[in-house]
Length: 301
Ligand code: HEC
Ligand code: HEC
Image (cartoon, rainbow, N blue to C red; front, side, top):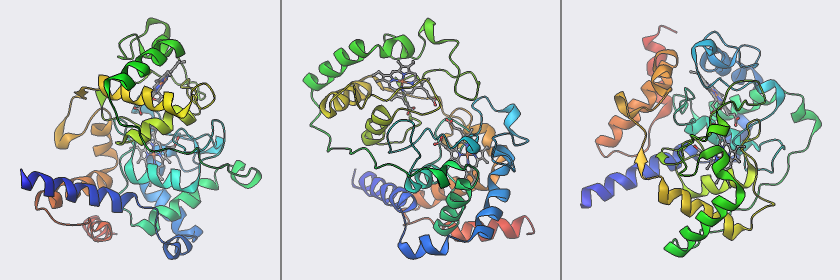
């Protein structure tokens, strides 16, 4: 029992340190355009394309297409619908990946390298020069979950018409939603809300954020205006109450197109696996840098 708790703490601290937003010193050091460009070419271009248009050589065989960065439209943000993401939002996605898609956590990169590539991504869209980013939507502390809150969430789910896309039971199989497209013209299916892990992230706050900001570029709207913070938290409670199953796991616990990504993005996959191994030994933070150097040696670079 005790062991389990220690393991859990180790996992949380590793995730925490990997996702942390970094000291100002690291951020400054990362304002090196040449570094960002090199990191991008070596780690991202295969999927996202040399020009950042999402048309890398591997994109064709992926069902969920890599993001086209030239439009400046980002799904995973803390900012209001339609606005630019904050740097921390981009950093968070790069550090965590998008579960179930080929976008793996890029933990083969040091924090400095991840910040450098954040800055490089922003050069693909002129929106980052022309528009000011807006303030993050506040995430108030979660109220205590109880059956009343879940029931309120269920009634809001019905009231808002979530079922039109996600289905009456949340399984993402509403007949009216089978021909949905995203802003780039790719087919998109509403997420099955009964299965974990979620794309948005592992914490209830991540679901709250998605309900508040919407996923720009997709049919998933923002509910910041329609629902009060309490109602949004009730919706989160309801979702968590139906998210009782795990997505089918393949090797190394990978889900969905993460498995395809193993072949394309081997260094990120290895970094994830090494992190896993270290956790098994109950060790502390993952040394991303060591991993990166090691892989470079292995690949003769
Ligand atoms: C194996 C393919 C693959 C590689 C390699 C890859 N990505 Fe991705 N990336 C994706 C896919 C697919 C998505 C779209 C996920 C979705 O829309 O649900 C994505 C989404 C993203 C997003 C989310 C943008 C948003 O809408 O919020 C960011 C940021 C991102 N990638 C950055 C990177 C960076 C930086 C690298 C390299 C360090 C990288 N990716 C490497 C496939 C890849
Ligand atoms: C018009 C269709 C539509 C409606 C209405 C809609 N959604 Fe969505 N939702 C989507 C789509 C499509 C996605 C998947 C986006 C993607 O994969 O990038 C999504 C994604 C989500 C996610 C993110 C899941 C994850 O893996 O992180 C949550 C949570 C969610 N929806 C909840 C809701 C709730 C609750 C409502 C009602 C208040 C709602 N949605 C209404 C289409 C819709």
